Image (cartoon, rainbow, N blue to C red):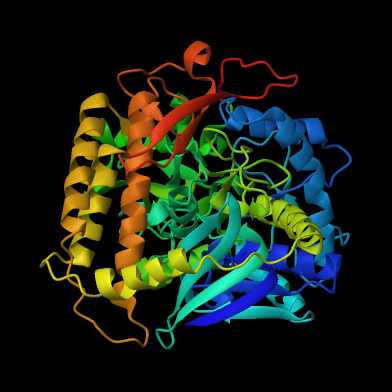
Length: 566
């Protein structure tokens, strides 16, 4: 057993984690900073962000406009005090990363360029062609190397240990040699990303399995608004690879199988640049009406994204999308249509936190997709994720460093630590009930796609809960055939599947009990928004018998809920 201490311990090496690490190191160079990730940081899913990150940079724009767009996009479930503060934090991060060398796209006069994005009232999405996440991640990682930040790459976190209501340790497996490693931090930042690989057709990397949400939940830290899962309108068929919203913001059209542009029926003012939930439902309704195409790209029905009329923009503005269409589908986007279908894309819910990034446990912070502030409410606006990682990653890093200065390391709770070590090597690794981890994972994803997707109804949601219960029973009977210590991916997958089963239960139960339609949560049997009964955050707390759901009012400052239309 290896034991490692860092004043500030960051879990997750993506955009929020790297930004937090830099902020902590800059805030107090005397504080040791350790970043633990199951991947090499530049393999984190943050590199896949494509289209842009919203910030008020233009004098014609305003913080109130950005805030209102976010609140309306959230279907009025976002906490307005948090949103108002958040939008004011973002511009500094754009200029900071610009000074650090991020190659933001430029206007002819040298100013940072901004494009339109879905449901924005002003073109404020700052971008680096259509490789925004890649370039921001490269910038952050390069900057992080200037400091004495300790990177613990390829360590898989299994449990957060609390003692007397305070953070005590995080247990991990060193994937390179199988050694059980215990990390301590005076403060801990969760920045482990979302949970999108609960679903089968998804834009996510396969590593995005909700580990941080589940680890926090099992330790007793509540999760918030987990039923709100975003489905991006344009996942490439059949792979699910993201086709950025920027493709529509730059002028792309959505067409049915007969070549008819249909978004005017559903969003007569914004068309293809309505909010993501609106566009995703429109595509699904078109497919259900028999106006989708099928056959050429597998069994999934789809519509088409048409970029032919903006072919002159593609090489400069959308080079990666053009490349993806060619490499994965053999399609030349300059003169051919791209098949698309809504794909799981973002987890609006996460660890219950606030704009200060604090959680219910002093000394534990959360940032990025792992957190639920709530800024995004029931539906995140495109271009409002990477800015959250930068702005609130920065807040978390400073707060954690400040906390670490005034606190000391607790004495390790060896009883809990030894129990977790025994659980890994004697329980998990030696299970031999004949059930296959990969098959359980596949069945879970099929269940979520089928029963907890874009459209939801009581009977399928009830069926999902029954399926999850059955999968949990099967999970207790898994066999891990690989008994090796070096890069035992089967053992890692077993933990990930356990995490996903917990989260799937919370998502489904939350969706079942929310008897309304709001943002990305659309109940066919309750098609209207119900502000009287459900303008509330869902809070999920762990119990041995499953999640306990309670509700908390949404914070409203000056924007009262109105009919949401685009």
